[in-house]
Image (cartoon, rainbow, N blue to C red; front, side, top):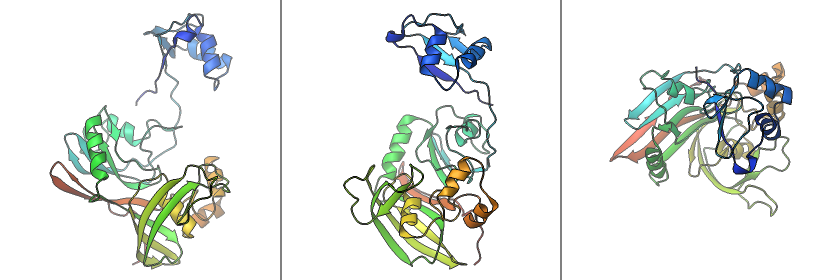
Length: 315
C-alpha cells in the first residue's frame, strides 16, 4: 500500500514561524488540537527529522506531512493491457476506477495499481504520465507514458487529423441515424450543480463562462427499449464533451448522475443517499460511456486499439 505524502517548501516570508502556528494558519482543514495530535503522532517531518510544534521554520525548509491512512471506497480493479512498448502502454480500465489520486481516492486508483505493479502483463512504474484520462465511471481506453518526452510525443500524434478517438455510449430515446454536433460548450448557468456544462450549435450568450468550441460526430449503432447505443467520435477534447452535448440535445446518457435524466441524482450520490427510485431511473450503476477505439500513427506504425464494450444489450 502506498503512503500519502504532502511536501511543503517553506517560503522566506514564513521565516521564524513556529510549526504549530504555520500549520494552523495555512491548513485550516484541521483544528489546532488535531494538528497537535498529528505532531505528537510523528506524522510531520521537518528536514528529515520528526517535527515538534515549537520548532521554528526557516525559508527553504522542507515540511512533510504523512497523514494517517483512511478508508477508500471500493473500486473495480479490472485493467487489461491492450498495447504496450518500452515507454508507453494502452490500457482498458473498468467503469469504477479513478485514473489518478483525488479526494478520498489514493490507493484505489489506476495510478496506484501501475505504481505497485498490480496489473497483469505490466511492470511497475514510478514515472507515470496519463496522456488520456477518463472519469472514474467511464470505462475503456487510457494511454499512459513512462516519461514526459514520450507523453508529449503521443499527445502530438493524437492531435493529428488521422488519429481517431471513438467512444460508445447508451442514451435515452431514439437517436437519429447520424448527427454532427459542432458548436460550443460553456458552464450551465441554470444547473443545480456548478460544474455542469451545456452545449449549443448557436453561439453562447455574452455572459457565458468557460466557453469552448466542441465537435462530436454521432452515429447510431442500434436502438432498443427506448434507448440507443451510439458511436461518438471526438474532433475536440473538452471536459464532459460527450455527456454534456448529448444532454443538451435531449438524449441524456444512461446511468449518468450529472448529465442523465435527473441532475439532482448527483447531489444525492455525493452524499451517499441515492434512493431505489434513483437507481431505477438511472438504469445502470454508472454512466454508460466507454472509450472504445483509439487509432494513431506512432513510431512509424499505425496503432489501432479496441476495448470491447462492457455492457450487454439485446441484439
